[in-house]
Length: 289
Image (cartoon, rainbow, N blue to C red; front, side, top):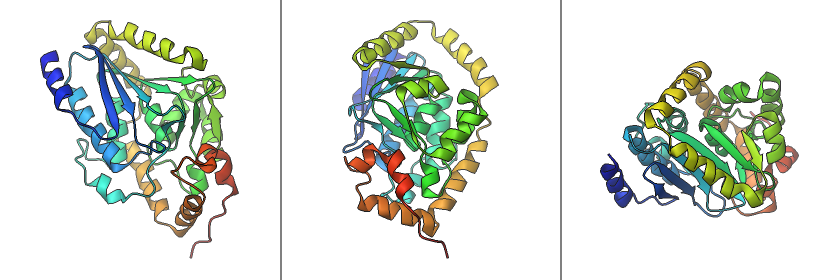
């Protein structure tokens, strides 16, 4: 099986992430889409190809997702791109592009770990919520769901995944407030598994991923199967979130907020992007017609 995997590694040429086989059972995926690691159609295409391989791979036990940018893990969905390009990508589930990715990540046979060192907002937060385990740097991690500031709901399933992790009241707090959560508070709420001091972060995450990758593949799969059975929503529930988001995105209020944010540095390494959870509350949408 690993021979086939090595062929994939040799042939896989992603543009906005890199794949590093740390061992036959431990793969590292590093997001790298400057300037702020937005989730665009090309990155989604890269992920879909990787997911297709992992869904069939019986050797890899752990996939660790980290970032080449210590300030931005995954900033958010690309709001400057044409969504029809992402929607034209193959969808193994038949669901919209981002739902296809997050649902498939949540069902992979491998243990998936997010190593959050930097900002993960919006779809970036939804990505880490779809993985099995989330570790955060105390000093560098920022998580948040700011969609309410766009007059929208989170479209990738945050409203379906957060309650099981943080509870009903805190899920409301996160989604209705639209503010940022640092690593320490995210750990206290259950948004992430553990917050680790940044100086120790890489060593801790690598050691944990390596330890798990050495266990029996079948045992890991069976453990994941039972936990998923009792904690995951039916896949089709996430379509409702996607439909609500894209319905909001078509409204003038959403477009007004997005235009004002782009004027102030959205999707650039700007003060606004670093402090989006705070800054979005200052934007007032134009009234709908």
